[in-house]
Image 1 (tube, rainbow, N blue to C red):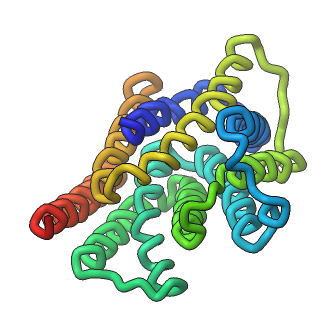
Image 2 (cartoon, one colour):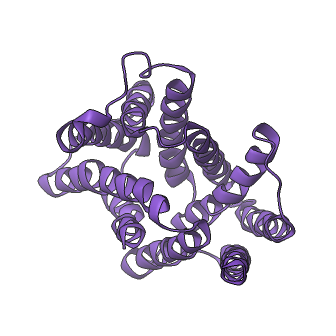
Length: 279
């Protein structure tokens, strides 16, 4: 339920960003700043004893999470600036499999055959999506989405290395740093009350609430089940934008997305089946 709630909160995020419109780096500033403040205040009020010790705020692990989340804020908003919602979200689906490759490289964790096959098909799906962006002016946005997936994957690996340590404050500082780094490149324009409320919804509600819930979910749920629940975001997010704003994903995106979704579903089902047999 925690993971499902996190996904449900995050589903309308892309639609809200599209409704805000304007320069996405300007939105990145507000999202990063607001989300960071809410996460820090929430952590301090709800679980004050879990705040990092004096030497843990900016140690190697802490700085890695801060920098990765800052890069994630910038790359996600840049992806939303230059490509479609469907492309951005479907490319983002490669993050768990990129994490598997990074774990193999840096943590010496093996990659089983099921994961290897899924990585191959996810890679194929990303290539198909990118091929549809050629000549459409969206390839740079797809690249930013891939960078975002890599930063999230590296974040997963860092969390795995950190164990049970609370990294939420570092996540908050990373969000704020991402917002500050976006500031010199942002194009701010006056906004009306409705747009201001959407910015507050995006930065102060959706991002911190979804991040907090999705950080807690994997503690109580097996990774394959988490993967299947997050499929809802990949399907419903672009569909919501398509229905409300008429942003058609395009044939190549639909084909590549189908390949990615089937690969994620195949991987999750095989892992669940294996866990059931083992039990």
